[in-house]
Length: 612
Image (cartoon, rainbow, N blue to C red):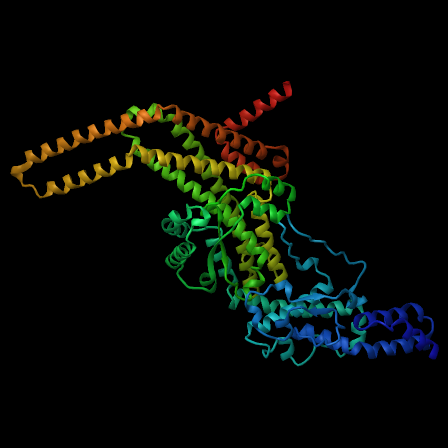
């Protein structure tokens, strides 16, 4: 007996906690399995040593609390507020920062060598992928269970709140089984953890989807970050467009924030915590540089850094963020998820800004309809504007109605089915029986939704997003040049003067009696003759400007640059990889190649290359 004790003390001299239990378990199972007396002695030591660890595990699985002054448990609470049972975690604390696993204290009964652990890693935007319940081990579930109970405590206003497991007055195991036997038996321990995990997950799911209204929060994100409703965008741009058109150092940020708050108040029927916490910020990096940082593309980043740094405008730098995301919404809208929402917003917002400028150009060109002598001279300008508008409108339509909307509808149906399931109702038929039943599944589904739409919006594809950005920048520069041209030729002044004179003539005729009808007719004739003279004079001025070498060179150059960028963009979309692996790229190509001209051009270029 003394020899056995000496061997045991020598083996476990410098270990504690879970590592101690693993060492004793290994001695009993391997070294003394054939010696009944020694085995009984080591098993007795193991039973006495496992008591404190079992108490900590039960406390963690039923209350989300652990008293571990000597660092012996497999879960280490890393956040001070969380460790001291404070409710301060509702102030934007990250869900993943609450606690971590201590590998050295994980019980061997939770380390099943036959259990396949899926390595998730990060996606191409540098964002950690969420883990679905089907990919979780017993250790992962034990880790999550305590966090769930801690979150439930905080949602119910303070650590004094009672969880269902505590209120039942007993542990998760209904049978009166030996605690150590369960602790060291992989199957029974896994079942015990699984029951506690699902109980905690069900409780937190009801809070998220019921009391907290998570679905409403996600609709808010879709409306303002994915620009789902045009009324907000129109209200915001009507007020902030002039300020956002300036270079970033000149933008008055307080004025833009004021227009944002005003636009939200006009379009949001009910106030919410997210609405009051939303604010605009301005990034110092362009969208392409931000994507390089997220994807860790150092080579591309250093290559562009060598070029002259461009001063961003407010439209290129603006982004939305929250002062803090209220808890427990921050479980789903974590920092990583908000980062994807932010880059999606910057892409869609800039594309809509370009579309708005091209539509304004089209509106300006309508003022030239009455000047029939300019039709042939303006044909090149009109044709280029039409091609640009076709591209940007189809690109925006693709992102919002072919990518975001279908993905959102699928996510909304699944979350609605989960809410019905938790409330005891029959889930909606649209979910097809597949919907998240745990918090981890819910977070996983939302994360996959964001990753999917970001991929289909071309964000991880550097070549495509770079070409698309260059095309939109070219369109924006062209619209600015045409705007300056319209101001120089004073077409707007002519149109405004004609409108005012017509208004005075119309309202003046109402006060003229029957005896003065002839005078009214003469006034109308004079107005029309004067309008014709002014129109012809303005048309001659515009004709002179259109005939200059500088203007023709500008239109030709813009046409060449736009056509080159568009051809390269379509060539990448039409690549073999895009056709075989990504149906969304083919979908976008077909939208842009509406008459088959682009595909025929690319085919002829390929034939010429093959002939050479």
